[in-house]
Length: 305
Ligand code: PMP
Image (cartoon, rainbow, N blue to C red; front, side):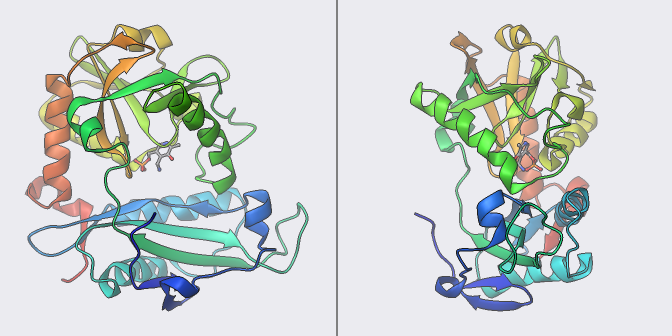
């Protein structure tokens, strides 16, 4: 069960957690016609700080643009509302979920006449793949479910409906005894995981699949890139085959909910305990989000300035 807090922001005002309700004929509930973000706020010495808020708000507006949803708030208003949501709930760290959805009023597959509504909820949420996964790595399975073809579902938009695909892959992996799934693109290249980007390390280089393989342009992924560049580790965006995962020196995942997670094995091919590059990236990432490395101060928005 979710750990609840006091308030949720809905269309411009705060309502009590228990009262944040919608009608059963809400358009998005039927057709998956929403877009959303996953953001985190971390505890720092200067109080809670939201990690890369601008990039998340920008991606939310990009997602809405792709689906022709006209968000009835400005970027500044949603930025301020996100900060306020963390502030009023008095949490030191939390996961934040801004959602743009089509509300009650019309049904059917033309979404354009439906009202566009926005909610922002926050709650304390531990690392998505667990503490053991963060420390020792997760066991991955290549899914029999393919990731979206970009002309079936645009991977650049974080649309609610596209996550049915993620859930199919996640359930398959869990039922088979693994922690998480890796999905291949329709062309057979490694794409991403159900809610994370993936990286392999071979011969001292980090490689991650391109958006053309169906991967979301991850904000944590771009943080990994900057950290790798600062560490002088070569970083490439390029196609990866499943066999590249089997023979990787190291592999790891990145995502807002999961954070930076080592991969321990893929399809029962052992990679083992986290290697030095994974460890180095992970360590700097966790220092950065907590405001302990001033090179990355531009990533943080302090909630109580
Ligand atoms: N891929 C998918 C499918 C995701 O849902 C996410 C989480 N938003 C990611 C990758 C990682 O993106 P980010 O680092 O921006 O959270």
